[in-house]
Length: 160
Image (spheres, one colour):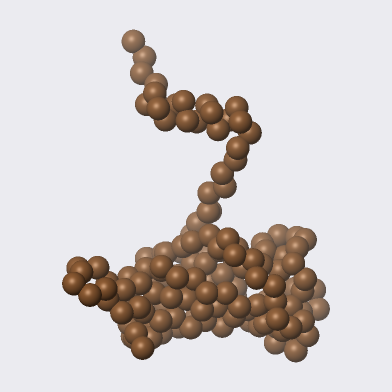
C-alpha cells in the first residue's frame, strides 16, 4: 500500500488552491554570501541610489520572558538629488547578524517623496541592542528586474 506525501487535509487544501487558481509566492532567500557582498550604492538608469537604515530595539515587554523586537526604518535615497523613479518599491528586507538571516516580505507600497522612499518594518528579530547588522533591501523597479542594495554595519539602537 502506497502512502501519499500529504495528509488528507493538506492534500485537499493543496487541490483546492490549484483548482481555484489561487497562487502564493514564497520569499526567495538569497545565499548569505550574496547578501554580504551586495553593493551599497546602485545606478538605475540615470538615478544613483543608496540605502540608509536606522534599527531600534523595542523595550522588552513587561512581565514576560520575550525580548523586544527590532524596528527597521529604511530610506532609499536618490543621491543625485532627482526624484525616485516612479513605481519603485522595496519588496523585501533581509537583516544579517552573526551569520543569521531574518527576512520579511514588505506589502506596503508607499509613494516616494521627492528623492526619498521611506518605509518602516516592525516586529523584526529579537537581537540585542549595540550590535552591528547588515541591512539589505530587495528593490523592485516598475519595469525590469529586482535588485539588492545594502546598508552595512548598522548598529541596533537601544529602546528610547
